[in-house]
Length: 116
Ligand SMILES: [Zn+2]
Image (tube, rainbow, N blue to C red; front, side, top):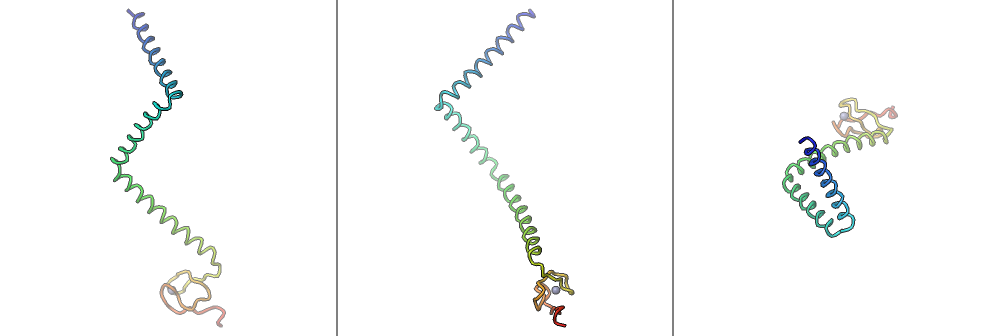
């Protein structure tokens, strides 16, 4: 009884291995069949995208916003790094170019150091 069960399991495993082997051989030597299977997978992907379109749009929008904020911060850092002659407005604290006459944020007159 016990021996028979192991025999059946052995044969089943052997058949599965053989089918897998045949499947791999067919995949390698018959590109037409492989293409048909692949086209089914592409169709499945298409249906998946159609089903999840709202979620995908949501993800894309959120990612775009995160990237946008990142670019803003980076751009500002580069701008401030490149303009070495920046001073800070004593009224509002905004970073402004040293030789400008008025603050771009609060509009108050800047008293330059060099003016005396
Ligand atoms: Zn100001």
